[in-house]
Length: 262
Picture 1 (cartoon, one colour):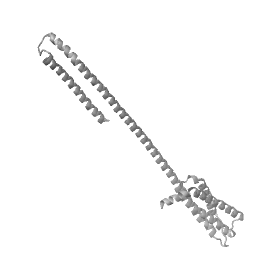
Picture 2 (tube, helix red, strand yellow; picture 1 turned 90 degrees about the horizontal axis):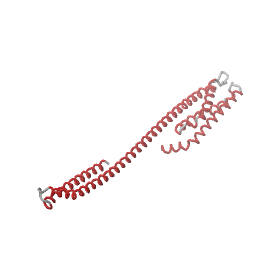
Picture 3 (cartoon, one colour; picture 1 turned 135 degrees about the horizontal axis):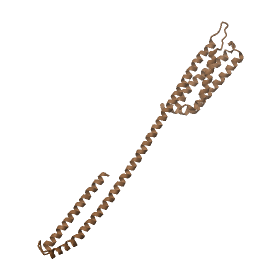
Picture 4 (cartoon, rainbow, N blue to C red; picture 1 turned 45 degrees about the vertical axis):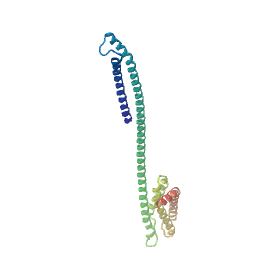
């Protein structure tokens, strides 16, 4: 835009100089024509100078008017051209401003999306950390509860103590929490939860089976043992149902991620 304006300015100056030169040349030509051709030289009477004034004004006036008119037309043309250039500059400025606004909006959206992703990732990490600690604690309680089935008294009998009750309560509560939080896991977290929950479900099922096998050697009442077995059965079923839901929901994603990894 600046280049076009500069070129127009040069053209205008050139035309202006040309018109001024043409006007001066016309004046000199009129003087020469009068004094050398039609006039009486540099002398003469007042009547002669009166004729010269009439001749000068009659011949040079229309020429100067025409040159002035031409200059005005060219000035209008330059003004129109300048207006077009300014309009283009305004349009370009508006487009640049709109592009800048769109870029700013996109930048804000990207920052907002990045923030949301970071918050979501942190929540997943906290949730995953909670469940991993819970599963580790559950496995530890299961190992301690197994001692109830291996520690026999002098008569060869065993007793299900507080360790079994603690393990039963922890397994029961963990299975409920896993069931309630299934929809809160992303694919990556769900895969780890599936691995840990499978291990804990197997441990629960083995402990239930060992109680059933050792039932005749237990000092606890039959009613208490049957109640424990039902509770372990329900806990194991909840684990298995949760594992099934996780697998049905994320198996295709896990498989795809595994193939991409290979």
